[in-house]
Length: 583
Image 1 (cartoon, rainbow, N blue to C red):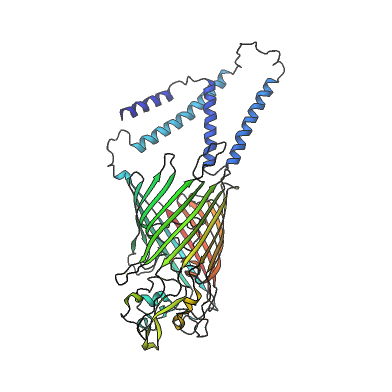
Image 2: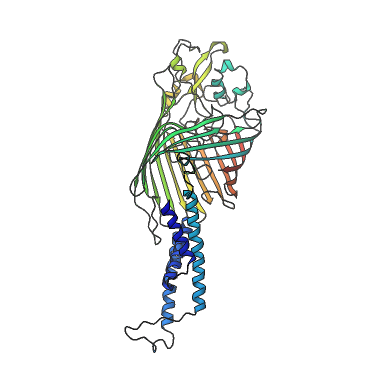
């Protein structure tokens, strides 16, 4: 502490005292200040490295030209100094004083500001101001207020239980089966009634430094516990309090080499999505396979290898050129009544390549394998629902949205042998390719182009159709048992233009995408919960944008227009207007 005080006193005294440095030193300071300013403008995205490089080269050429011009002035050759003689051009005293005073003022403000900031951050002169453990915690969060309107097409299929109505498998299974649910309209997907909702999302994160390179994280969020892909809370609960759930709880270790490169990350617990998906929420990310609100339970590891840094005239060094590999294992459902739990295991390899002009290419290729998730019909003679096959009853999924091919697990004799509980008819082993290219030519605006493709190679047509009359594929309106065909492809193309991230007043971006998701291309439980109001078997487009109102406060608007791919007509449009704040 004494050394810091002495250093502060010496620094301030040197600023208040008369500057003794010569003009050469002052010019060097001005040159360094200008160069640092240009570097900072590049870092903030105001200038591209190409423009900055051209500015510096032009300044050097102009300076050299001025020197030659002064040397070629009349009388200069006749007045050439003799060998060994040094002449100093005359500069008026008032010019020297003005330059010296200007440089002194700028340096004083800069250094004093740095010193005061350091004193504040390190709490100089305040011994033991706060306990050490307090400094190891970081609290952050965000809040979103949303107005959402759902508009149903006038020619949609009915939703009253008549032929062609779409079954709500999640509601049926949650109520204990179709017979237990009775004639409840919640057993069917709403296809006819427009809906307007006000919704809110609140997330609070606490990160704690355990030791060097190891941290613990906890995040609380609103939302309904049975829904893993939404943290929205719909307003209108007669004043009842909201649920505030444990959304994440994890340990994260980062191994860093001597050059500061993060070459290994290990994460365990309830964690964020470890896979590359193209970007963040409403900023280039794809929800083709994974909804942005989804958290993963299990363990993940990412190893990275640096391919070098991009170098320019500004000597910029970074880690934007690397390859990586991620592996993860995540239990989905565990029960004491079954020796084989449901699991998700996956791996991804990828490349990140940053160019000298600040363009960036990112590619990820992944394989996801879901284990033990297919429906297992009861083994008793008439497949009557009961407790005769506890392991088979375990094959009922805890959560589904809409679209995947479903099969009955058991039947109910009271309803003429109708299927009562439902499970997934297909296995899901998904190959996913995701890539994006960030074009920084228009900096500070960026043009980001992305594409995402997924295919379920685990689908087996013969195996699925072996369920026979147990298939419940939301029929075509004829009442006949459908033949299930291979509908296992999904793809999306997207374009974003504007600021890469909106965080301050006046910053903005706009985006548009087209998405096509066949019935069994991905697991409908984890895909986008807003597109076609959640699930698969849908196609359509989305347009939207973000606009910064002030620092850490921005507005988002989206219009989603979607149609069913196969089955009775079911189309809807969704308008979402969001006010977002982060802290």
